[in-house]
Length: 113
Length: 114
Image 1 (cartoon, rainbow over the protein chains, first blue to last red):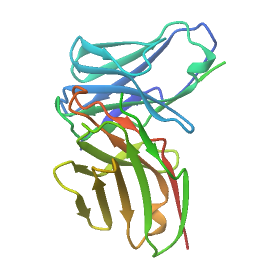
Image 2 (image 1 turned 60 degrees about the vertical axis):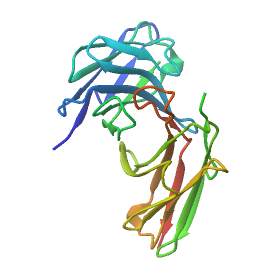
Image 3 (image 1 turned 180 degrees about the horizontal axis):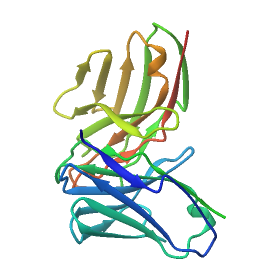
Image 4 (image 1 turned 30 degrees about the vertical axis):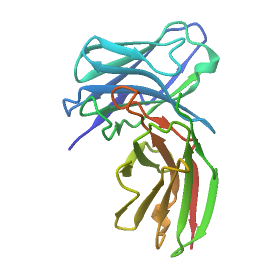
């Protein structure tokens, strides 16, 4: 059963704290993504990873960084979180470097106070 | 860069009727148009897509139409059922954007009322 997992599912942090969001997939997909979802804005792409240690900025990378040391694992890091980073974060993966279907994780709801 | 607009933010239909969600895009080079469904409190999952080499695709009760001249595509859900109630997102991908980068619309919240 193809699956994208995310941890944690819910997180509350204070402004200025560091945040680590984890994503895993068991499909050996090459490409992984991080999005954030805000009401009325749809999904906005933060970062893409084409493979291990091969990452590119998406449309809204400021304030975020990523790490991919294994193909099945992709992390999103917020150094010194800000209140405007309160959002729902989705990880996704797709099989290859084409216009393939993306498989989404369950999401992480982050609240920055 | 590519921009995708969903015209309806909310849509309400009676069970059994058809629902139509419309999207427009800006980049004439866009060639791949998927649709995703998000049920309340859940994640997104893929429902149907269309590529620019065709102008119509059907999968059971779902029909996608693509009008390249107007840079418009639409999702038609026929014989709607209560379980069709969800937020639907359209998206577009261009050949110039590498590696499956999708631009999403803002989402349309569909309610199917009995």
